[in-house]
Length: 250
Image (cartoon, rainbow, N blue to C red; front, side, top):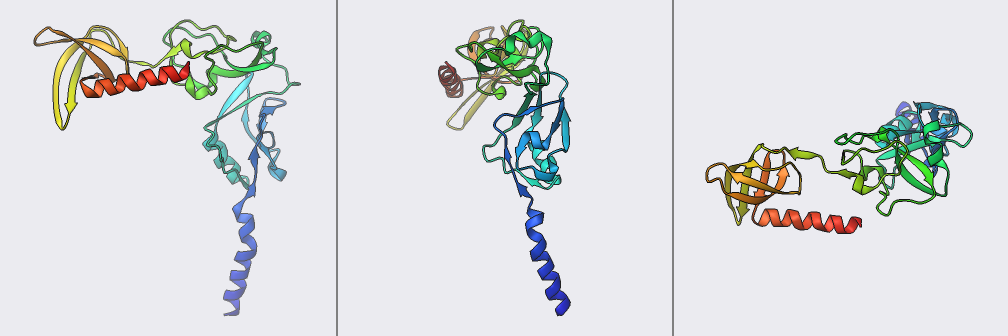
């Protein structure tokens, strides 16, 4: 019995240490020498401050917040991520130098997202393609978060160092001109499907003219996914949803 009491007491004494040291993400995440440490990411990192968790080869490095949280926990730190951050962008500190190609873009008073490399039309924007820089002004439709651009397709050639804007990109095309697609009508439990040939390329939510392969009649549809389109109430809802998103982005 005495042994059991002592064991329980030991667990109670040790439990605060097992919980981890609470830390908060710094508002300005920069590193001094290309090696990103927990102390450069978090306030209150204490003894774990010098632990290197990533390296930065260019002006910025984009870290996955969930992976950072796991790494911090293993080091005895508890970051609750109260704001639901998905990615952490770490920039070069003021004394660490930078990429000469982007030096001109880094002067100014406004922080904007810019392209870390030149991109061709049709390229998919990846996390490492975006950096935060200082600029004299930002585009009227400048994205507030990198997630608005990541995974999107470049609509035109984009120059390294130029400020990013929402009009630079579009949703990736899921249908090509000439593809055979399914056209679906759904309403009140009734579902009908026919085959048609896409007259153009389209992304999810785009209006797309499709030729019925049987009747040769051309109908207007809305793209719902790879190889699939819709007509009727479902198509109207998709168009209304996309139009509201476009209006909100202006």
